Length: 605
Image 1 (cartoon, rainbow, N blue to C red):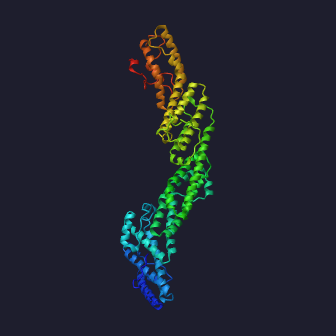
Image 2: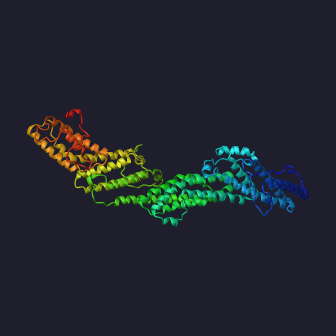
Image 3: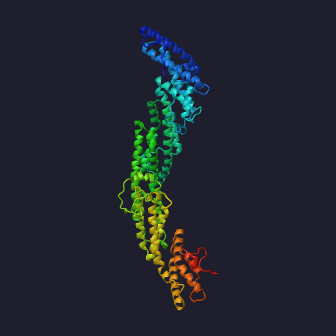
């Protein structure tokens, strides 16, 4: 509050001590008289008895009395100026004591008014509401215009509404009390009221104040649940609670007082918040803990700019330091867990082959894990900053040259690619558990195809690049070509041509029947879990068998030759029966037909 000196005193006037005392006596007398009359209008009569501190039920700063409230502050401003002048010129004045007593009573009443405004406007002053205000907005001082001007200008900054008067009221009351020497009383009320809001809100959100020792004794399953709660609490606390308190204290108080209030209200709660994250970083480093740990890391990383902005005071440097320390420790934990995860892949020691050459459970586990890791690519990019992994030069591109689709080759991309390579090496070793080479290649194709299908629709494709996907699709096809050659080469070679006739035709057909039946018997229990890949293999086999067999059948239909056992449609049905793991001994339903081009087909009525 700005106190205006009476204009009757000229700077150039030379006034003697007696005249100064006379002036101060007159000034204190007039001010005490005016203040006494005004104060007793709003403070119940028994408040004039110094033994009581009760106040009237009607608030000075209610909507209907707000102008009176601001007149009250003006009267106190003049009284305070008179007291200061009298202390300097005539400290023994009898009226000075009465003025000081009136001021104490008025300040006691203002304490209550300050609390009333805080409490009655709690919803408007909630952190959720305040955090949406502009932190740059200024509330005009009382001397810069009328109270209505102040409210109007502030209303634009905080979204309008009559409740902007509450901020002006609080600021003016605070200015009056602080300039009158009652800063301690004012901020004590403010700190206690606002701190309780922070503590209660955090408690309502589910945040528990636990020491590091208490948290380290928790079972991981319990701590994991608390991490999920913490992620929510941290975002609300930083962006809403602490942010709102910083904005509100800056609106009501001058900078030094605002800092003191903000620190007292938020510091301990903020430090408690990051004690939790540091404790998470100290947890035992196992692979299954990496995702909750990354959740904590990612939350702090995303909130760091806001943390630096809100806790920018030197007195709140501990919060910034604790947040940064949390990031460092969590980063170390994630790196250790990545190493542990890679180790778990290489140490997997199962010796039993997967039935039918299907997808190994290790492939499913590892790829699901890595796909989830890729969803944290922004965080991992800041954690995995260096890479000396021995990846091949052309691992990310088919040409060995960089291009927009070949991945960014960042340490993070290299680390995830390396994990997949470790997995594929392990799968290659497991393919040797099969005695049949054809089944080994089918196993490799199944597992690599699973890897590619997990990468293709996920964020891993962005990380590794389109060329990585294309390269590994080529390898899947190479495995399939080798499988097909070993599994069906003899059948294809024994296929009779449509020009084969007589005894030669019967012998050729006998060889084909034996080769096909043997292949079918062997392969009917082999599996291709992915339906698209299964269709692709079935279609490839049909393309190589059906044209030749259909041409032969046109000349030698069933009955014309003693050993013609299948129509082309029968043969087609046997092929579609393969790789589902439920091989049958008779043709299945006619659902798929691989009859190739019209030139090689015939009417099968």
